[in-house]
Image (cartoon, rainbow, N blue to C red; front, side):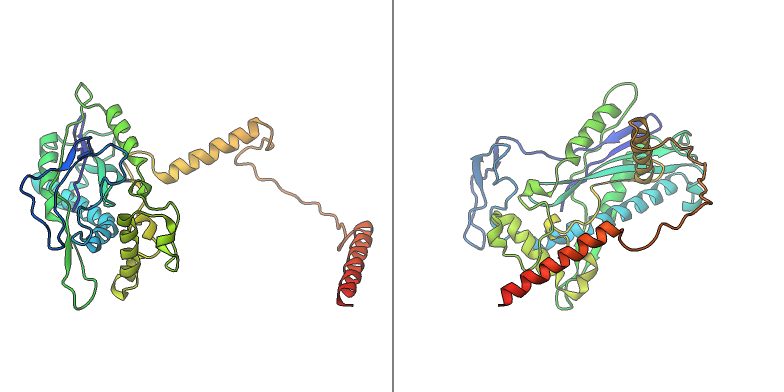
Length: 345
């Protein structure tokens, strides 16, 4: 359904995977192209520019499986979780260990970002690293090499799937990763560096669902999709989210709520707990930084963080409005009543 790009590191080495990218060239040139069942020729000889809105659109919308596209986006997070579990099992088997014993020898750390392809299907980029049992500060065992990690990834990716049934009468759909798997090593002594991978990941982290032509806000089921100025392909994807979202068996996927994201409801960037700073820690750092800035600029008084302030003296100040404010309130109320009476007459 989609390609699965990775990056991985073992000790000071690792692998990186990259998906295809659109180029200014004919997208589907076929000399002996035959028409599809709907009468459309499945060939395109047009040289598209990088910003051509036709990029990513199916040659025949009636042949395109919009149901599978939406369901894959909805299942992508679960598919990743199952891949990570399968990868741990393969690493444990390679080391002659059980899963419980594996945690005493190494930790699988990762960070991944989700990129939207122009056709509206999510595409994953990941950095996968093998750390020692204490995290990034400890080295993995000698047998946990880059080649071993690469082989484990190649075996785990096609081995996992998610089965989804839309209705009782429809067959179960089996969703898997695509066949494209580009794995490249990351090393500290040359080749693909961590800095270049970080720049690569940051580039694709900025490609949201809007690149497909959808909206950047939730879309209500009662809205007229034809009035939103959408191209036919994203409009069909959103309409399919609404159709599937109304099915009781798919209620937990919340496809109606996430129609503007074409069914994907996860965060665009996630990481394992030991990979690096967690999102919670980053929020704490930002809060502390903002507080220090407020104190430095004088917007907040300077207090010791752990010094409680005790107030033991209280004085009763009164209740209700002060005399002056009470007089004004009565005058305004009287004026409004007089104006209302004049309108009635």
